[in-house]
Image (tube, rainbow, N blue to C red; front, side, top):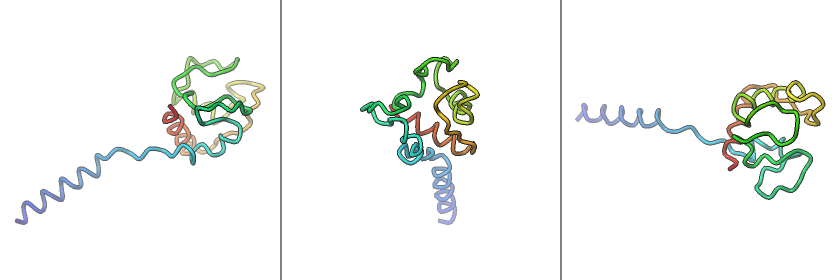
Length: 111
């Protein structure tokens, strides 16, 4: 009996350890972004380009020299947009790497 109990606990522990990570809540992670960017497929033409479907695609507009938005390019952009595109209207910078990761995860989900 005791042997089976320990085996069951080990299996449960393993199941918890292998559970997929929780998905980011796009509305929460992109709250500050939604001030200037549309995060829905509706495209309400706010100040910045729409973020819905942006991950994995070429940046809209001129002057951003990346083939497509991926983790690396988004991390650099969010850390300092003016460094990637001098004269950009986007003045919002995300200094916290964890916060940038949350935003990037949320952008991946906007499909």
